[in-house]
Image 1 (cartoon, rainbow, N blue to C red):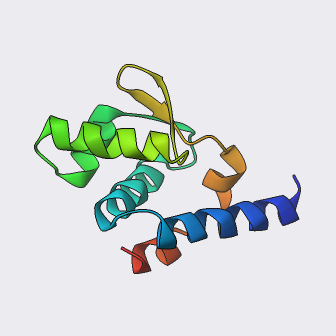
Image 2: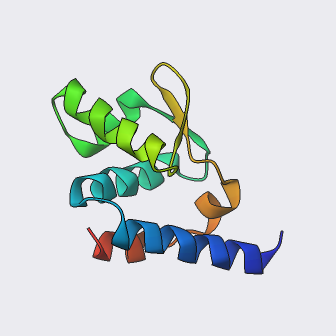
Length: 100
């Protein structure tokens, strides 16, 4: 594993989170990272449980925006993943949480 690549990716994602995501998108992304717990894939239901958001349309809209921004990838209906496994293994959630 190339640690420089991981550091660069982490900085890229931090920049994206700080500058291009809305507060709601950042909150959902932090929930995604927490739900993953070292895995790469997650479901719509995982995010609904973790965020406590009740409206499916709202959650779906936020996930769709995250897909369009390249933060996550939709694999099939209700199933998503974070595209870079190295990022999942090394991202500092505490840094992300400070930006929410």
